[in-house]
Length: 483
Image (cartoon, rainbow, N blue to C red; front, side):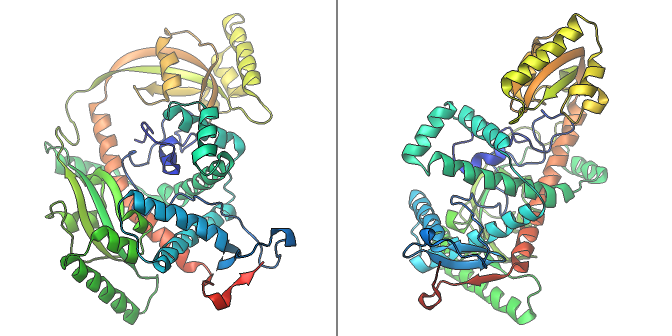
Protein backbone atom coordinates (compact mmCIF):
# COMPACT_ATOMS: atom_id res chain seq x y z
CA UNK A 1 0.00 0.00 0.00
CA UNK A 2 1.44 3.37 -0.96
CA UNK A 3 1.43 5.78 1.95
CA UNK A 4 3.79 8.34 0.48
CA UNK A 5 6.05 8.58 3.54
CA UNK A 6 9.46 10.01 2.80
CA UNK A 7 8.69 11.20 -0.72
CA UNK A 8 10.76 14.13 -1.95
CA UNK A 9 9.90 17.34 -3.72
CA UNK A 10 10.65 15.72 -7.07
CA UNK A 11 7.78 15.15 -9.47
CA UNK A 12 8.23 11.42 -9.12
CA UNK A 13 6.83 11.73 -5.60
CA UNK A 14 3.36 12.05 -7.08
CA UNK A 15 2.39 8.41 -6.96
CA UNK A 16 2.94 8.46 -3.25
CA UNK A 17 0.97 11.64 -2.61
CA UNK A 18 -2.14 11.23 -4.71
CA UNK A 19 -4.77 12.90 -2.63
CA UNK A 20 -7.86 11.66 -4.37
CA UNK A 21 -6.88 8.22 -5.60
CA UNK A 22 -9.20 5.28 -6.23
CA UNK A 23 -10.69 5.11 -2.75
CA UNK A 24 -13.14 2.46 -1.72
CA UNK A 25 -16.30 4.54 -1.36
CA UNK A 26 -14.87 6.40 1.64
CA UNK A 27 -13.13 9.45 0.20
CA UNK A 28 -10.42 9.20 2.85
CA UNK A 29 -8.79 5.78 2.75
CA UNK A 30 -5.16 5.43 1.71
CA UNK A 31 -5.27 4.56 -2.03
CA UNK A 32 -4.77 0.90 -2.87
CA UNK A 33 -3.40 -0.68 -6.01
CA UNK A 34 -0.15 1.28 -6.18
CA UNK A 35 3.37 -0.05 -5.69
CA UNK A 36 5.23 0.89 -2.50
CA UNK A 37 7.10 4.17 -2.47
CA UNK A 38 10.33 2.27 -3.17
CA UNK A 39 8.93 0.83 -6.38
CA UNK A 40 9.16 2.15 -9.88
CA UNK A 41 6.60 0.90 -12.43
CA UNK A 42 8.16 -1.13 -15.20
CA UNK A 43 7.79 1.72 -17.64
CA UNK A 44 6.09 4.44 -15.70
CA UNK A 45 5.62 7.71 -17.52
CA UNK A 46 8.62 9.98 -16.91
CA UNK A 47 7.94 13.12 -14.91
CA UNK A 48 7.09 15.83 -17.46
CA UNK A 49 9.54 18.53 -16.53
CA UNK A 50 8.50 20.84 -19.32
CA UNK A 51 4.96 21.88 -20.22
CA UNK A 52 3.20 19.81 -22.84
CA UNK A 53 1.52 22.61 -24.76
CA UNK A 54 -0.77 21.74 -27.63
CA UNK A 55 -0.88 23.86 -30.77
CA UNK A 56 -3.20 23.09 -33.69
CA UNK A 57 -1.13 22.59 -36.81
CA UNK A 58 -3.49 24.77 -38.81
CA UNK A 59 -3.11 27.73 -36.44
CA UNK A 60 0.39 29.20 -36.38
CA UNK A 61 1.40 31.04 -33.24
CA UNK A 62 1.16 34.83 -33.33
CA UNK A 63 4.20 36.68 -34.59
CA UNK A 64 4.99 37.84 -31.06
CA UNK A 65 5.65 34.21 -30.08
CA UNK A 66 8.08 33.50 -32.92
CA UNK A 67 11.63 33.22 -31.59
CA UNK A 68 14.90 32.61 -33.35
CA UNK A 69 15.88 28.97 -33.02
CA UNK A 70 12.47 27.81 -31.80
CA UNK A 71 10.80 25.50 -34.26
CA UNK A 72 8.83 22.28 -34.46
CA UNK A 73 10.92 19.15 -33.95
CA UNK A 74 8.08 16.61 -33.88
CA UNK A 75 4.42 16.30 -34.71
CA UNK A 76 2.43 13.92 -32.49
CA UNK A 77 -1.08 13.45 -33.83
CA UNK A 78 -2.45 17.02 -33.71
CA UNK A 79 0.16 18.40 -31.30
CA UNK A 80 3.73 19.57 -31.77
CA UNK A 81 6.93 19.45 -29.74
CA UNK A 82 9.19 22.48 -30.13
CA UNK A 83 12.94 22.87 -30.11
CA UNK A 84 12.72 24.96 -26.95
CA UNK A 85 10.77 22.23 -25.14
CA UNK A 86 13.21 19.55 -26.27
CA UNK A 87 16.26 21.59 -25.24
CA UNK A 88 14.79 22.16 -21.80
CA UNK A 89 14.17 18.46 -21.29
CA UNK A 90 17.65 17.59 -22.59
CA UNK A 91 19.25 19.88 -20.01
CA UNK A 92 17.36 18.06 -17.26
CA UNK A 93 18.31 14.64 -18.69
CA UNK A 94 22.00 15.53 -18.93
CA UNK A 95 21.99 16.89 -15.39
CA UNK A 96 20.36 13.68 -14.19
CA UNK A 97 23.01 11.53 -15.91
CA UNK A 98 25.75 13.61 -14.36
CA UNK A 99 24.16 13.26 -10.93
CA UNK A 100 24.13 9.47 -11.37
CA UNK A 101 27.77 9.47 -12.55
CA UNK A 102 26.68 7.97 -15.88
CA UNK A 103 28.79 9.00 -18.87
CA UNK A 104 26.27 10.51 -21.29
CA UNK A 105 26.09 9.25 -24.85
CA UNK A 106 26.46 11.63 -27.75
CA UNK A 107 24.27 14.72 -28.03
CA UNK A 108 22.37 13.12 -30.90
CA UNK A 109 21.59 10.00 -28.85
CA UNK A 110 20.41 12.01 -25.85
CA UNK A 111 18.27 14.08 -28.18
CA UNK A 112 16.69 10.96 -29.66
CA UNK A 113 16.10 9.37 -26.25
CA UNK A 114 14.54 12.50 -24.75
CA UNK A 115 12.38 13.18 -27.78
CA UNK A 116 11.00 9.64 -27.71
CA UNK A 117 10.14 10.03 -24.01
CA UNK A 118 8.31 13.27 -24.84
CA UNK A 119 6.40 11.59 -27.67
CA UNK A 120 5.25 8.78 -25.39
CA UNK A 121 4.26 11.33 -22.77
CA UNK A 122 2.35 13.42 -25.31
CA UNK A 123 0.34 10.44 -26.54
CA UNK A 124 -0.77 9.75 -22.98
CA UNK A 125 -1.72 13.36 -22.30
CA UNK A 126 -3.76 13.36 -25.50
CA UNK A 127 -5.47 10.14 -24.43
CA UNK A 128 -6.27 11.67 -21.04
CA UNK A 129 -7.80 14.71 -22.73
CA UNK A 130 -9.87 12.52 -25.05
CA UNK A 131 -11.13 10.58 -22.01
CA UNK A 132 -12.21 13.83 -20.35
CA UNK A 133 -9.78 13.43 -17.44
CA UNK A 134 -9.14 16.76 -15.75
CA UNK A 135 -7.14 17.96 -12.76
CA UNK A 136 -8.64 21.09 -11.24
CA UNK A 137 -6.79 23.67 -9.16
CA UNK A 138 -8.26 22.36 -5.91
CA UNK A 139 -6.84 18.89 -6.48
CA UNK A 140 -3.53 20.45 -7.50
CA UNK A 141 -3.45 22.61 -4.37
CA UNK A 142 -3.96 19.51 -2.21
CA UNK A 143 -1.13 17.69 -3.99
CA UNK A 144 1.25 20.61 -3.50
CA UNK A 145 0.24 20.93 0.16
CA UNK A 146 0.90 17.24 0.78
CA UNK A 147 4.32 17.40 -0.92
CA UNK A 148 5.23 20.42 1.22
CA UNK A 149 4.04 18.61 4.35
CA UNK A 150 6.11 15.53 3.56
CA UNK A 151 9.18 17.71 3.10
CA UNK A 152 8.40 19.45 6.41
CA UNK A 153 8.09 22.88 4.86
CA UNK A 154 5.19 25.24 4.29
CA UNK A 155 3.73 25.78 0.84
CA UNK A 156 5.26 29.28 0.86
CA UNK A 157 8.69 27.82 1.64
CA UNK A 158 8.27 25.26 -1.12
CA UNK A 159 7.29 28.04 -3.53
CA UNK A 160 10.33 30.12 -2.58
CA UNK A 161 12.69 27.14 -2.97
CA UNK A 162 11.33 26.23 -6.39
CA UNK A 163 11.53 29.82 -7.57
CA UNK A 164 15.15 30.08 -6.39
CA UNK A 165 16.58 26.70 -7.33
CA UNK A 166 14.03 24.88 -9.45
CA UNK A 167 11.82 25.28 -12.49
CA UNK A 168 9.70 27.94 -10.78
CA UNK A 169 6.58 27.34 -8.75
CA UNK A 170 4.05 27.85 -11.54
CA UNK A 171 6.01 25.57 -13.86
CA UNK A 172 6.19 22.96 -11.11
CA UNK A 173 2.40 23.11 -10.63
CA UNK A 174 1.78 22.56 -14.33
CA UNK A 175 4.26 19.68 -14.46
CA UNK A 176 2.52 18.16 -11.45
CA UNK A 177 -0.87 18.60 -13.11
CA UNK A 178 0.31 16.66 -16.15
CA UNK A 179 1.76 13.87 -14.04
CA UNK A 180 -1.52 13.54 -12.14
CA UNK A 181 -3.33 13.34 -15.47
CA UNK A 182 -1.13 10.46 -16.60
CA UNK A 183 -1.55 8.63 -13.30
CA UNK A 184 -5.33 9.04 -13.54
CA UNK A 185 -5.19 7.71 -17.09
CA UNK A 186 -3.21 4.67 -15.96
CA UNK A 187 -5.76 4.02 -13.22
CA UNK A 188 -8.56 4.08 -15.77
CA UNK A 189 -6.96 2.26 -18.67
CA UNK A 190 -4.66 -0.23 -16.94
CA UNK A 191 -5.03 -0.60 -13.18
CA UNK A 192 -8.81 -0.92 -13.31
CA UNK A 193 -8.58 -3.78 -15.81
CA UNK A 194 -6.24 -5.97 -13.76
CA UNK A 195 -8.17 -8.70 -11.97
CA UNK A 196 -6.89 -10.99 -9.23
CA UNK A 197 -9.10 -14.00 -8.54
CA UNK A 198 -9.69 -15.66 -5.19
CA UNK A 199 -8.31 -18.87 -6.70
CA UNK A 200 -5.03 -17.12 -7.53
CA UNK A 201 -4.85 -15.75 -3.99
CA UNK A 202 -5.43 -19.22 -2.52
CA UNK A 203 -2.71 -20.68 -4.75
CA UNK A 204 -0.15 -18.04 -3.78
CA UNK A 205 -0.86 -18.45 -0.07
CA UNK A 206 -0.38 -22.20 -0.36
CA UNK A 207 2.77 -21.79 -2.46
CA UNK A 208 4.44 -19.42 0.02
CA UNK A 209 3.19 -20.92 3.27
CA UNK A 210 5.99 -20.82 5.84
CA UNK A 211 8.55 -19.36 3.44
CA UNK A 212 10.89 -16.55 4.38
CA UNK A 213 9.98 -13.10 3.17
CA UNK A 214 11.29 -12.34 -0.32
CA UNK A 215 14.41 -10.26 -0.72
CA UNK A 216 14.14 -6.76 -2.10
CA UNK A 217 15.55 -6.62 -5.59
CA UNK A 218 16.67 -3.70 -7.74
CA UNK A 219 16.59 -4.36 -11.47
CA UNK A 220 17.73 -2.46 -14.54
CA UNK A 221 16.92 -3.23 -18.15
CA UNK A 222 17.93 -2.57 -21.70
CA UNK A 223 14.88 -2.80 -23.93
CA UNK A 224 14.98 -3.25 -27.69
CA UNK A 225 11.47 -2.30 -28.61
CA UNK A 226 9.54 -4.13 -31.34
CA UNK A 227 6.53 -2.13 -32.56
CA UNK A 228 3.18 -3.86 -32.43
CA UNK A 229 2.43 -5.86 -35.58
CA UNK A 230 6.03 -5.82 -36.87
CA UNK A 231 6.79 -8.33 -39.67
CA UNK A 232 9.03 -11.28 -38.89
CA UNK A 233 12.09 -9.79 -40.58
CA UNK A 234 11.83 -6.68 -38.38
CA UNK A 235 11.50 -8.86 -35.27
CA UNK A 236 14.61 -10.77 -36.34
CA UNK A 237 16.50 -7.51 -36.94
CA UNK A 238 15.64 -6.22 -33.48
CA UNK A 239 16.62 -9.51 -31.88
CA UNK A 240 20.01 -9.28 -33.54
CA UNK A 241 20.37 -5.77 -32.13
CA UNK A 242 19.65 -7.17 -28.65
CA UNK A 243 22.23 -9.93 -29.20
CA UNK A 244 24.88 -7.34 -30.13
CA UNK A 245 24.10 -5.36 -26.98
CA UNK A 246 24.37 -8.51 -24.86
CA UNK A 247 27.72 -9.30 -26.46
CA UNK A 248 28.93 -5.80 -25.57
CA UNK A 249 27.85 -6.27 -21.96
CA UNK A 250 29.64 -9.60 -21.71
CA UNK A 251 32.67 -7.92 -23.18
CA UNK A 252 32.78 -5.46 -20.30
CA UNK A 253 30.59 -2.58 -21.47
CA UNK A 254 29.01 -0.50 -18.68
CA UNK A 255 25.32 -1.42 -18.35
CA UNK A 256 24.12 2.07 -17.36
CA UNK A 257 25.99 3.78 -20.20
CA UNK A 258 24.77 1.23 -22.73
CA UNK A 259 21.20 1.60 -21.48
CA UNK A 260 21.39 5.39 -21.76
CA UNK A 261 22.72 5.10 -25.30
CA UNK A 262 20.72 2.18 -26.70
CA UNK A 263 17.69 1.21 -24.62
CA UNK A 264 14.22 2.02 -25.87
CA UNK A 265 12.79 1.86 -22.34
CA UNK A 266 11.42 4.99 -20.74
CA UNK A 267 13.97 4.54 -17.94
CA UNK A 268 16.95 4.60 -20.35
CA UNK A 269 18.29 7.92 -19.08
CA UNK A 270 18.27 6.54 -15.55
CA UNK A 271 20.81 3.99 -16.68
CA UNK A 272 17.95 1.57 -17.31
CA UNK A 273 17.12 1.30 -13.61
CA UNK A 274 13.58 0.09 -12.97
CA UNK A 275 13.50 0.53 -9.20
CA UNK A 276 13.39 -1.61 -6.08
CA UNK A 277 10.63 -3.84 -4.78
CA UNK A 278 10.14 -7.18 -3.03
CA UNK A 279 11.37 -9.84 -5.41
CA UNK A 280 8.02 -11.59 -5.66
CA UNK A 281 6.37 -8.42 -7.00
CA UNK A 282 8.38 -8.27 -10.21
CA UNK A 283 6.63 -9.68 -13.31
CA UNK A 284 6.85 -13.45 -13.56
CA UNK A 285 8.78 -13.17 -16.83
CA UNK A 286 11.47 -11.13 -15.10
CA UNK A 287 11.60 -13.37 -12.04
CA UNK A 288 12.28 -16.41 -14.18
CA UNK A 289 15.03 -14.60 -16.09
CA UNK A 290 16.97 -13.44 -12.99
CA UNK A 291 16.20 -16.26 -10.55
CA UNK A 292 19.79 -17.61 -10.64
CA UNK A 293 21.61 -14.29 -10.97
CA UNK A 294 23.72 -12.50 -8.40
CA UNK A 295 24.05 -8.69 -8.11
CA UNK A 296 25.97 -7.33 -11.07
CA UNK A 297 25.04 -10.18 -13.40
CA UNK A 298 22.90 -9.84 -16.52
CA UNK A 299 20.27 -12.15 -17.94
CA UNK A 300 19.90 -13.80 -21.27
CA UNK A 301 17.64 -12.06 -23.78
CA UNK A 302 13.97 -12.44 -22.90
CA UNK A 303 11.06 -11.56 -25.17
CA UNK A 304 7.78 -9.92 -24.18
CA UNK A 305 4.99 -8.37 -26.20
CA UNK A 306 6.96 -5.13 -26.10
CA UNK A 307 10.26 -6.40 -27.48
CA UNK A 308 13.52 -7.88 -26.20
CA UNK A 309 14.83 -7.28 -22.68
CA UNK A 310 18.23 -7.68 -21.07
CA UNK A 311 18.00 -7.47 -17.28
CA UNK A 312 20.63 -6.70 -14.68
CA UNK A 313 20.33 -7.45 -10.98
CA UNK A 314 21.61 -4.20 -9.48
CA UNK A 315 21.05 -5.06 -5.83
CA UNK A 316 19.60 -7.90 -3.79
CA UNK A 317 18.77 -7.30 -0.13
CA UNK A 318 17.91 -10.21 2.13
CA UNK A 319 14.78 -10.01 4.27
CA UNK A 320 13.48 -11.76 7.35
CA UNK A 321 10.05 -12.85 8.53
CA UNK A 322 7.27 -14.60 6.69
CA UNK A 323 5.99 -13.37 3.36
CA UNK A 324 2.31 -13.97 4.06
CA UNK A 325 1.77 -14.12 7.82
CA UNK A 326 -0.72 -16.67 9.04
CA UNK A 327 -0.32 -16.06 12.77
CA UNK A 328 -2.98 -14.35 14.85
CA UNK A 329 -3.02 -10.57 14.39
CA UNK A 330 -5.52 -8.97 16.79
CA UNK A 331 -6.17 -5.26 16.23
CA UNK A 332 -8.64 -2.75 17.57
CA UNK A 333 -11.18 -1.78 14.93
CA UNK A 334 -13.53 1.19 14.96
CA UNK A 335 -16.97 1.33 13.40
CA UNK A 336 -17.48 4.87 12.15
CA UNK A 337 -19.51 7.16 9.94
CA UNK A 338 -18.57 10.52 8.52
CA UNK A 339 -19.90 13.53 6.66
CA UNK A 340 -17.44 14.94 4.13
CA UNK A 341 -17.57 18.41 2.59
CA UNK A 342 -15.07 18.94 -0.23
CA UNK A 343 -13.78 22.47 -0.66
CA UNK A 344 -13.81 24.16 -4.05
CA UNK A 345 -13.84 27.60 -5.62
CA UNK A 346 -17.45 27.81 -4.47
CA UNK A 347 -16.99 26.37 -0.96
CA UNK A 348 -14.01 27.70 1.01
CA UNK A 349 -12.35 26.01 3.99
CA UNK A 350 -13.99 28.44 6.39
CA UNK A 351 -17.43 27.93 4.85
CA UNK A 352 -17.04 24.12 5.01
CA UNK A 353 -15.97 24.26 8.66
CA UNK A 354 -18.86 26.59 9.55
CA UNK A 355 -21.39 24.43 7.74
CA UNK A 356 -20.21 21.29 9.53
CA UNK A 357 -20.32 23.11 12.88
CA UNK A 358 -23.97 23.84 12.19
CA UNK A 359 -24.64 20.21 11.35
CA UNK A 360 -22.89 19.12 14.55
CA UNK A 361 -25.16 21.43 16.60
CA UNK A 362 -28.19 19.81 14.98
CA UNK A 363 -26.84 16.36 15.89
CA UNK A 364 -25.79 17.11 19.46
CA UNK A 365 -28.48 19.57 20.50
CA UNK A 366 -31.36 18.71 18.19
CA UNK A 367 -30.98 14.97 18.23
CA UNK A 368 -31.12 14.62 14.46
CA UNK A 369 -29.90 11.44 12.75
CA UNK A 370 -26.26 11.37 11.64
CA UNK A 371 -27.26 8.85 8.98
CA UNK A 372 -29.87 11.15 7.47
CA UNK A 373 -27.64 14.24 7.55
CA UNK A 374 -24.86 12.28 5.86
CA UNK A 375 -27.25 11.23 3.10
CA UNK A 376 -28.30 14.86 2.60
CA UNK A 377 -25.03 16.73 2.88
CA UNK A 378 -21.98 14.48 2.49
CA UNK A 379 -19.95 14.78 -0.71
CA UNK A 380 -18.51 11.30 -0.25
CA UNK A 381 -19.43 8.10 -2.09
CA UNK A 382 -20.50 6.69 1.28
CA UNK A 383 -23.37 9.24 1.51
CA UNK A 384 -26.11 6.82 0.26
CA UNK A 385 -25.13 4.51 3.14
CA UNK A 386 -25.45 7.34 5.63
CA UNK A 387 -21.68 7.91 5.70
CA UNK A 388 -21.03 4.34 6.90
CA UNK A 389 -17.34 3.42 6.71
CA UNK A 390 -17.70 -0.02 8.22
CA UNK A 391 -15.08 -1.45 10.54
CA UNK A 392 -11.76 0.37 10.18
CA UNK A 393 -8.40 -1.14 11.13
CA UNK A 394 -5.35 0.95 12.05
CA UNK A 395 -3.72 2.85 9.13
CA UNK A 396 -6.71 2.33 6.83
CA UNK A 397 -7.51 6.05 6.82
CA UNK A 398 -5.34 9.12 6.47
CA UNK A 399 -3.53 10.15 9.69
CA UNK A 400 -5.55 13.32 10.29
CA UNK A 401 -8.80 11.36 10.25
CA UNK A 402 -7.52 8.41 12.27
CA UNK A 403 -6.05 10.59 15.01
CA UNK A 404 -9.38 12.31 15.73
CA UNK A 405 -11.40 9.11 15.31
CA UNK A 406 -9.25 7.34 17.89
CA UNK A 407 -9.83 10.14 20.41
CA UNK A 408 -13.63 9.70 20.36
CA UNK A 409 -15.72 7.46 22.58
CA UNK A 410 -18.55 5.39 21.03
CA UNK A 411 -21.51 7.69 20.44
CA UNK A 412 -19.39 10.86 20.21
CA UNK A 413 -19.34 13.22 17.23
CA UNK A 414 -16.12 15.10 16.45
CA UNK A 415 -15.66 18.78 15.87
CA UNK A 416 -15.08 19.60 12.17
CA UNK A 417 -11.65 18.31 11.17
CA UNK A 418 -9.65 18.77 7.98
CA UNK A 419 -7.91 16.08 5.94
CA UNK A 420 -6.44 16.14 2.41
CA UNK A 421 -9.90 15.18 1.15
CA UNK A 422 -11.82 18.05 2.72
CA UNK A 423 -13.65 18.65 6.02
CA UNK A 424 -15.26 15.90 8.09
CA UNK A 425 -17.60 15.21 10.95
CA UNK A 426 -16.88 11.79 12.45
CA UNK A 427 -19.24 9.61 14.47
CA UNK A 428 -17.75 6.61 16.30
CA UNK A 429 -20.40 3.94 16.72
CA UNK A 430 -18.50 1.04 18.27
CA UNK A 431 -15.13 -0.61 18.85
CA UNK A 432 -13.95 -4.21 18.87
CA UNK A 433 -10.82 -6.33 18.87
CA UNK A 434 -10.63 -8.41 15.72
CA UNK A 435 -8.15 -10.98 14.43
CA UNK A 436 -7.22 -9.68 10.96
CA UNK A 437 -4.35 -12.11 10.28
CA UNK A 438 -6.19 -13.96 7.52
CA UNK A 439 -7.53 -10.72 6.06
CA UNK A 440 -4.05 -9.18 5.97
CA UNK A 441 -2.64 -12.37 4.50
CA UNK A 442 -5.09 -12.29 1.63
CA UNK A 443 -4.59 -8.56 1.12
CA UNK A 444 -0.80 -9.06 0.89
CA UNK A 445 -1.28 -11.88 -1.61
CA UNK A 446 -3.68 -9.80 -3.68
CA UNK A 447 -1.22 -6.89 -3.81
CA UNK A 448 1.63 -9.19 -4.83
CA UNK A 449 -0.38 -10.69 -7.68
CA UNK A 450 -1.67 -7.28 -8.76
CA UNK A 451 1.88 -5.92 -8.94
CA UNK A 452 3.07 -8.85 -11.03
CA UNK A 453 0.33 -8.25 -13.58
CA UNK A 454 -0.03 -4.50 -13.76
CA UNK A 455 3.48 -3.56 -14.90
CA UNK A 456 3.46 -5.75 -17.99
CA UNK A 457 -0.05 -4.62 -18.83
CA UNK A 458 0.96 -0.99 -18.54
CA UNK A 459 4.01 -1.57 -20.72
CA UNK A 460 1.91 -3.21 -23.43
CA UNK A 461 -0.74 -0.48 -23.25
CA UNK A 462 1.75 2.41 -23.42
CA UNK A 463 3.57 0.80 -26.36
CA UNK A 464 0.34 0.20 -28.27
CA UNK A 465 -0.70 3.82 -27.69
CA UNK A 466 2.65 5.01 -29.06
CA UNK A 467 2.46 2.67 -32.05
CA UNK A 468 -1.01 3.94 -33.00
CA UNK A 469 0.05 7.59 -32.94
CA UNK A 470 0.92 9.59 -36.04
CA UNK A 471 4.46 10.83 -35.40
CA UNK A 472 6.58 12.97 -37.71
CA UNK A 473 10.09 13.81 -36.51
CA UNK A 474 11.72 16.96 -37.89
CA UNK A 475 15.19 17.07 -36.39
CA UNK A 476 17.21 17.61 -39.59
CA UNK A 477 18.36 21.14 -40.40
CA UNK A 478 16.55 20.96 -43.73
CA UNK A 479 13.28 20.22 -41.95
CA UNK A 480 13.30 23.14 -39.51
CA UNK A 481 9.91 24.81 -39.55
CA UNK A 482 9.76 28.21 -37.87
CA UNK A 483 6.53 29.41 -36.37
